[in-house]
Length: 417
Ligand SMILES: *Cc1c(COP(=O)(O)O)cnc(C)c1O
Image 1 (cartoon, protein in one colour):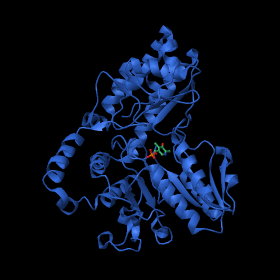
Image 2: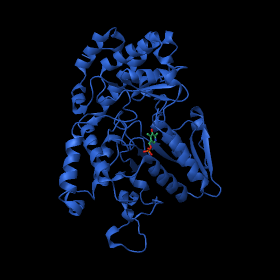
Image 3: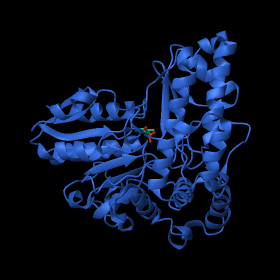
Image 4: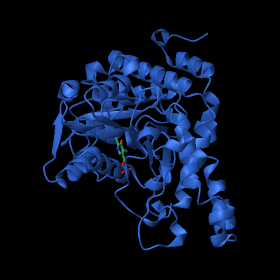
């Protein structure tokens, strides 16, 4: 029987939720220090226990002994497509529609440029004003490299109205990084298609945390990052999705040798590879892709519907406890109250939010801070427990009651917040 979150009144209630959690056993598949409460899996996912031995084998055997033969014998050359095909299953794409390559920003550059080049009759690139910074920066940069294109940014609530017949591409991040608010992928994609525009979704804060179905939504393009809820490790490679129906029409603007139809023919003229391999640029980082693959294999063991359900329940618990115990300390909840519109995070606003986050980190509770006043708590469903939410709220209350958040040492911002 599933316990109703609103019935939870104490830590014991959270222990019962954990005992009932069908995903509970996954936690031990990660390296997690029991003296730390990790609330930042939305920025850097935890380390799967299977990753270090796999990398050790890769380094000592495949690289150390196999040397260059391993490009063929150990499947290195296919890794970008193979791991892409696995990520495809997490996002509702076909295996030949996803490739692991480069970083999210670079993949954004490749896809946005490709669309603007393919559609010279439409001069507007549209996005949301508060999109993730790299999405804004890359899009603005690409638009400015075309002679008379406009990079149009509008408020979230004005997006649908701003899609007109000048728009070549609408580019959006599915889950807002500050608040965790989820866009309606199907509805916005349909609105864009009605106006003849294509849509690119950034799934960085979605994949591995929520069920996704890009093809059911008729999404055209997507990118996403490997190091957040996918747990691929710091600086893990990213992925890109190109719907099969667009693969002929769009061309990778970075013509690197590995995107060539026949890289080892070493011809002087570039001929693009067909399919997703054409989106490769360079030799893939095999160490990094291998770490990502271990983590993606782990995510594929579980049903993403269940993962999304747990995300909703963890964040509901967080928000309910914040409403009842933190409002008197000056916090307000920044995440949507409707669970269907919330990613795997809960965000609080507080005028001294930066000091609160620093004081929590000094107590072994690790969230992060985003300007101007947002304390973000990542609730990665694969390894976050309901008791972790309870204990985090307890720590926030303690930080407020002791005044620890006002420590003058927290006045100076660290470079990474
Ligand atoms: C984390 C994140 C990225 C990461 O970009 P990289 O270039 O891979 O570092 C991009 N977009 C969004 C929305 C993100 O949250």
